[in-house]
Amino acid sequence: MSQIHADLQKGIFRPKHQTLTEKDKIRLEVVNLRARLREIEATVYALRHSYQYLKIRKVIDWDLHFAEIKTELEAEKARLENNLK
Image 1 (tube, rainbow, N blue to C red):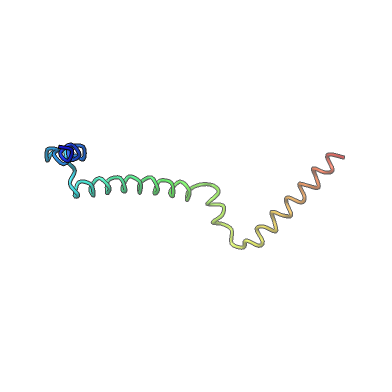
Image 2: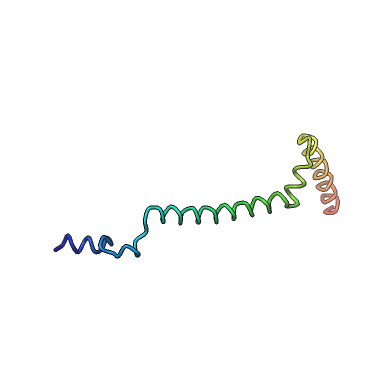
């Protein structure tokens, strides 16, 4: 009797139309994966068309880029320090 009860709880005696076959489970997983893929593709598209990404793509010499930024920041720091005096 307890074995029958355990089988009922596992769903062994469910009607055939209520159980998912292995094929149905795989199809469901494919649908979920395709939806996730579309989300990832949309994120990548948004990133590739963002201002920051496009700006980074234009940088050819990173050493020069950071040297220029360093110079600009040092100049701004000096200007701000002079404003405090």
